[in-house]
Image (cartoon, rainbow, N blue to C red):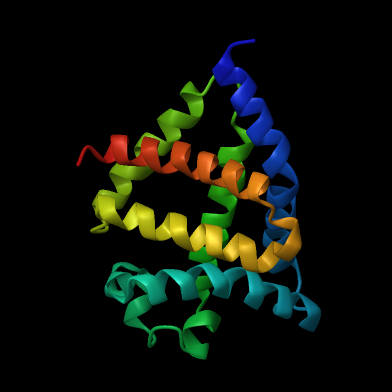
Length: 172
């Protein structure tokens, strides 16, 4: 096994359980209106966007749901456009992690396409660092003590693969 394959295997081992948690939340959001699920929904969906909009409020107009609601308002979090976007982000991260392995070419191809697509939305290269910071803050808040330095390092590596490929696809 090459060094890269070993690194990818270690990353997959450390982040799979967190992705399973996030994927379950997506399933809950899509399949129930249970009040307990609503609490999970708020925890999981609010946190990354609260972080993004706190770190860089100037990016809010880039989101389709921004035209309908004030930033970080209750109405924004209840907006179907917001819920769809947030669930899509979680699903994309889960898919990306699931595709990590010895052959990264299929994942890189998808991420290149996403990067190119995001240029059309007005996303700049600097925005990827904001999202990365928000992802780490969200995982730290959601996972608490389970978010060890080792898990954090694995997520930083995974996001590095995701953002690096998207930036490359965007051809800034």
